[in-house]
Length: 111
Image (cartoon, rainbow, N blue to C red):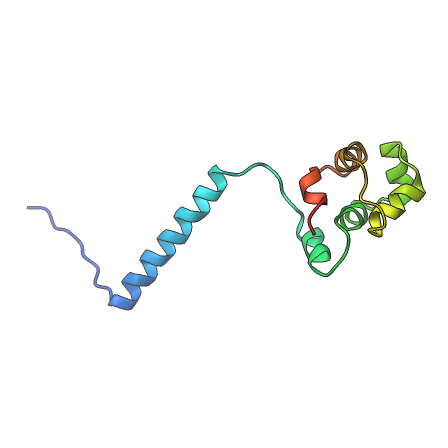
């Protein structure tokens, strides 16, 4: 005859385990559905605190407006206007900026 080990839990402990299991299942589902886009923590905080996503990414990468201009082929003044929200930036410009910053356009258009 084999012996089975048992564990006794309180209802509260059992429910905590079930909740934790559900959280882990949700996390795994999110990983499976991942689109591959990651926003660095410092960038996310800067955006939450009111910085333009373009500024947040550029500064996180240690780029100046001149550096970004060189990478995108866009004028420094145009980039500055986009960063300050004075110009929306054309689709082509935003695509060039996103590529230079290693992200996607939709991330840069977070309001």
